[in-house]
Image (cartoon, rainbow, N blue to C red):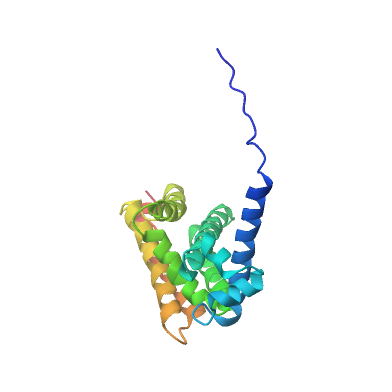
Length: 213
């Protein structure tokens, strides 16, 4: 039997390292400015000034300011997937895990700067656009689905309905909260998130006859 020897990828060239560094500077500058001023109030010229690059250089990396926001949203989506997995692995019941997730979601949104509303909208677009980003939608669905399947397997959540339907119920609550927070001024996110988690806990819980079966 032939042995397979794993080899490390070749080191990046100086040119490749510089390109990555420039891209990171653009993203870091954009995040800082979007947080300070909001997306709409931040011109490309300001991002270039903060990143110390020419505007021509900016457009070599990103076709538009919206594409910068999209890449930031992809990073935020990856963080969201990590948050769901962390909650899933945390001790407690499924109800407590859902409450913890929605509480963290609300706290992070309320503490964020002006960019966060635009970022949430773009995050949902990234997750559900056709094409390569559809993979992100699948990952988000799987992350919530794993949390639900754990609860069904432990007997905490109802088995009267398919786990797929329960997963979509949780995702629906998540999307409604994010959509309302992004588009409604004065939306009481923390209170509604807490209420949503409690409602989901009640709706998904196994009935007494299931628990005693």
